Amino acid sequence: MRHTLIASLVAAAIGLGLAGGAQAAPVDKQVTIRPIQLCDDGGGNCAVVNTYEAAADKIWAQGGLDFVFLSTQIWNSSAFRILDADVGEEFAMFNAGSTQFGNPGVTGIINMYFVGDFQVTGSTLYGEGCGALVFIAACQGEAGVVINATDVNAFNGGLGRIDTVAHEVGHVLGLGHNDFGAGGANNMMTGGGTRIPATNLGDIAPDGANRDQLTADQITEARRSFYVTDLTAVPEPASMAVLAMGLAGLGLLRRRVA
Amino acid sequence: MVVCSAARDGVALDLVPFPPARETMSSPDGRWMLEISVEPRARDGHAIGTMRHDGAMLWQHRLNQPIRPRFAVVADDGAVALFGCWHNIPDDVSIEVLDPGGATRLRLDQAAIERAVGVSVGAMADAVRHGVWLDRVPRIQGGQVLLGAAGRALVLDLRDGVLRTAR
Image 1 (spheres, rainbow over the protein chains, first blue to last red):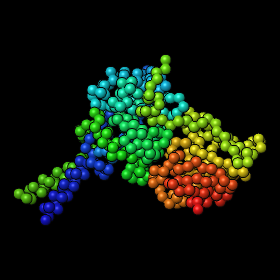
Image 2 (tube, rainbow over the protein chains, first blue to last red):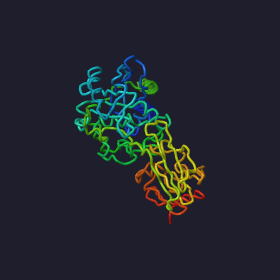
Image 3 (cartoon, rainbow over the protein chains, first blue to last red):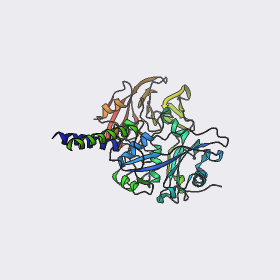
Image 4 (cartoon, helix red, strand yellow):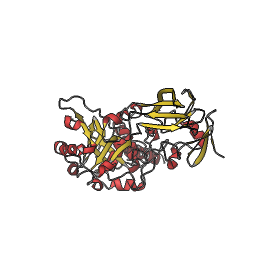
């Protein structure tokens, strides 16, 4: 009885260590992202990079996905630091970036460009996500995510539009604004004019005001994406400690049984 | 050269349309006219409200709502009710009532709306048509504003700020 109790506690500790804490679903897949910081030709006026990783991870935990951000690359390019979406300047950036940093369609790593401004007539434009086959025509065959660092970071009095990164990656994974159950104010993929974004982690589904939800259909579609791969990330230090405790306990149990 | 692409229709973009640069609302008797003007590209901007009575300007000042209120209605006594803000974020000023001189008479926050409706703001989302909680466009009726949330008709009294479900 005592050995069974110890074994249960050990198993729980190992499970907790591997899972990295409470999640809406077991996290068993990941999306790997390469952040790219745009600066001017002289290396100044750099866009401020904020990946909003905690928000993105909690949102996509609904689908068992973890976002893994590689180290930020710097790109000195005045031509691409400020983009005009009316003339599709982001597509030229995606194309040049594929040569510079690797082609997402080959590497399976999403290039995420943080720019100083991203403008379109008549709207505040927070970002764009390209790479899914369903958007291949709209994105002129290019792949990548562009984040308007200035407007995203300034949103809500400087607290940031915390779900934009997760939303744009959703497009890369094949999700639109009105398909697979999107369209409601609390859905993460609903267009910006209608969506009510979570303003803090406590309001991201399934908690609090239950914002930025994903439907079962959205999760199924996203997990089919080429960009979703098996987990390869190293667990966080806290999780490693719990895992080590569990494994140590397993060793103790074996010695006692022997 | 302009490149035409379906993406410009917002297919893979996360965008929020600019509010109108200028919008005018009048009282039912037409004597009070409120103009709300905003600089769309001002990231930290607030709108300017200008009130005229029989053509004469009575007050003009910066409004409290980030960017601008989503809706505004004007009563025949010059009181103004402002609802929500443009960027779909909940804030402490979900409803604000101004007196005819432009001063804040009362404010109702998200908690007050939840008490009146009887559900959390998060639960109101399924019925939302405008902003964070409204399911219909507010309209003035005498000294009251008719509005709604979570499928329930509400009445706001502009004099005492009581928000209740309509009978």
